Length: 439
Image 1 (cartoon, helix red, strand yellow):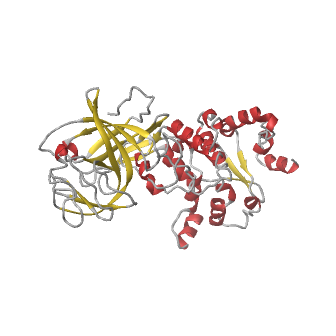
Image 2: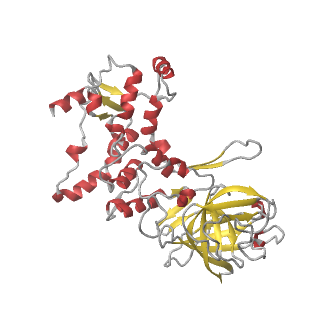
């Protein structure tokens, strides 16, 4: 305690009232008899760090750091890679602090966000061009950045603007990419505390999966491309599409070039594009490539299997938000019916495809050159010649991720060259009687 008092005295400003001390290991009870007080203290952690006059970091490596004999570059390198910047629990300390100090050998050292000429000159001399101070800032992002979801349209280049979505989930994944925790059940709780969210649903959740699901519902905005990932997923419906953890997450897999999806207690609400292939289809040999052709542009899209599976007799190919060319989900169409004046299609995701080339043609066929389907124009309903607009509600049961049920609304449109389909998921569960549609 005397040592702590000495450290705190280094932050004391002459003439101001004496500083009070709050420390997690001292102020959060761990005894089973004080469980209710522990829960209350955890709920107040976000407020505690935000309202603190200063936050002082105690790290063994930093406490041995001699700032008088160490260059600014070395100080930044040490700060960027010490244990404090690698632990998940400490994210909130840096992100929420108004003034952040690190205890060094001599005195508390305020974490600076700008580099001077000495640091810039030294960085220029080393083999990598990374600004180490910027690396530290990325690991300790400001709350204004973490809490904001952004949907941007880039400046037009060659007349084709690019839409980019950055959700809070993506920002969190970036902030915790190199952090870890010994208790995975703490992850969702820590992230919720950092964002100032209501932690009650997470604290009350019984296990890791349900805690992460509760966090996703609180976040609401989710990149639509998240369903195409092959990382470990939650084990229960309707969240089998969701990642089990954001730690060490492949950030490139979360790049999203369309409107964000929405997560609620019924599942995921998203917008996708795709081919509807449901006319007289016959199974295709797994080893064969598959060709789907845009009748308007005469562009032939060639796909090959990414995972083992079988191509269903009646299917839909669902693409990422930015269109044909990326990962593609194979969805088996189970049945079609009419409901409330709309065509309803129930499908099951059974695997993935990857586009490997392009050419000219019409039918969906195998690599042998023989049609994989009958000679009917299986894409007839989505060609410009028909000029049809069909609104669909599609219940998607994700077998690839588990028996989870979604609901989609889609519309064919010439605006997407008649072969792309927008699908808006309404995340319908069996008990949800009035699905809504995203326009």
